[in-house]
Length: 88
Image (tube, rainbow, N blue to C red; front, side, top):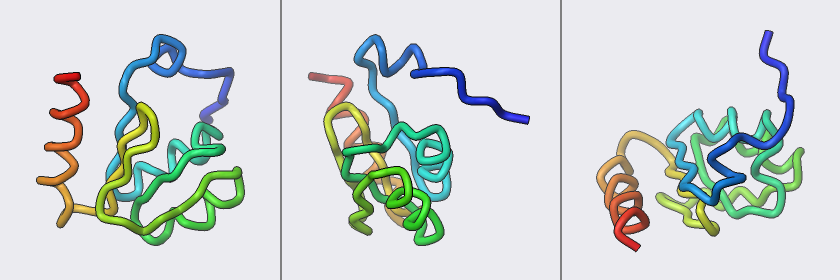
């Protein structure tokens, strides 16, 4: 069973956190989306809202170092957003 013990190292070190499709639900279950605008597959909307995140439903959403995408049809734009963030 997964037990959330605290903020992951990536967040503490200011690294990029990215998820696409239902993976946004994993971030929500870990309570990492609080106060962030995120998107993901429609089934993640309630999870995001329940932990204080803002579900936008946009194809790609960038909120600080968080990059999320709605689904497979957004994969190209998602990859481009990650690349752009890595080049900053």
